[in-house]
Image 1 (cartoon, rainbow, N blue to C red):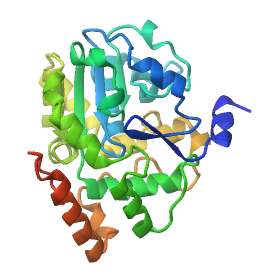
Image 2: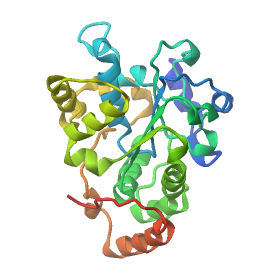
Image 3: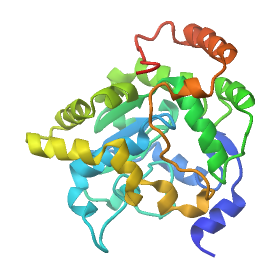
Image 4: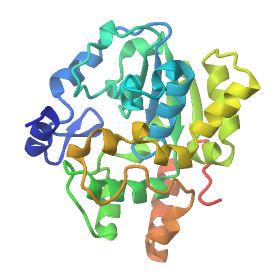
Length: 293
């Protein structure tokens, strides 16, 4: 039995860890505790998101910006999860301290458990997505990932999402806390919706923020290769293809990627309830989302 099969057979459900809910078996407390004192380098890049907010997308963009030569065809081709690994999980047991610079990581971690050295060194790209689309996408993930408890009833799941009892914890806490303290880090803040509206512009902003001096042809190539259509067709970009033991056969980790897909799932009553809670929790945050395009 492979290592991944062993993990998911013993893993079921979530456990809280310093402001975020993580997956038993997939995330190890010993590894998590070691991260807070993890030594940050000047050129480290962290892509931080709440779950289902464009994480695979930014992983793909960073892979193309920094590791394009390792994404070539052939037996040496690497997945984006290898090139931009999850900081809070280490299934492959890679020594992150021995990774060559510049290191690129993806993370869902809350501010309470991010390495403190990141406030002084490295860069953060933070992506936020409108929470109605996040809730629907996370609902499907809970029903697709074997290590998470399924919830076929969206109404019940939505209540749990609003309470923060889902993978990632509270969307409201994650977004408001990161935005409130973003100036304490070298941060580029983007929204998923802006990336959808103009992917090329987003690639330019990210590359400029990271100090990359790219010509128009390279920018166009990266924008094209990181399009939702191409990612959906690329097995190297899909975690469910790279790690099939964690996922059910029906479904896909990369689903629709649309802005406003929540309207196909939310009832009018659910939307009105959500809006009321959203306005109360987000009233002090100068952040606006597109709810449909």
